[in-house]
Length: 192
Image 1 (cartoon, rainbow, N blue to C red):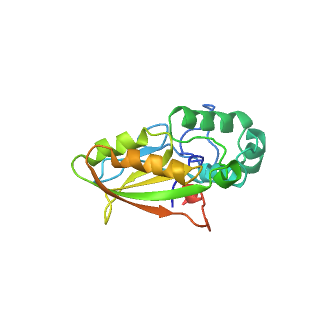
Image 2 (cartoon, helix red, strand yellow; image 1 turned 90 degrees about the vertical axis):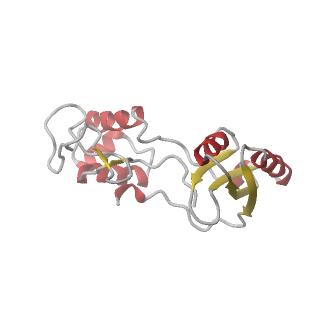
Image 3 (cartoon, rainbow, N blue to C red; image 1 turned 180 degrees about the horizontal axis):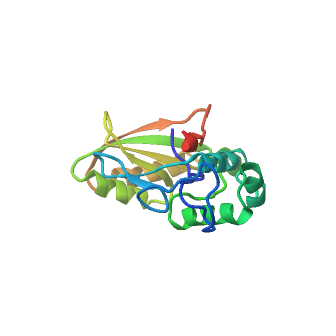
């Protein structure tokens, strides 16, 4: 359910080395990163061309795959792949990280906490996002105003974190959902 950083999202646009475009590349009419305004919401979205989708697929198969190997597989130079990826990292569009199994590292308690609050939801969300133990914060509709994911060592640490969450400004109630077993977690939405 939660999103963990690490998914590669590569927008379309000019060849990152500034050279001629490969077949299938196109210039997005808005900017070099292929950003477009999502109608009605004011948010920015990324437009992927076919070449970019193929880069994403390569990275999703193996995040440590070399730029040379990616370039060879999709018909771009190593430099073009490197520059595209670097531009996206620098622009905050994607992160390249290692995703660990918390259980293997001694974090035996994972939970999703549903939070009801009053007032400015974004202020509360920003406050909770500042807590190191919380790795996922989302403002939502429905029964809860916010959902946060917590990964911790044991129930004592969970209780301490939960106390801090409940003391956040305007929080009125919480409900904790303890993960018993993770069945599926993917990062494959990048090429849809």
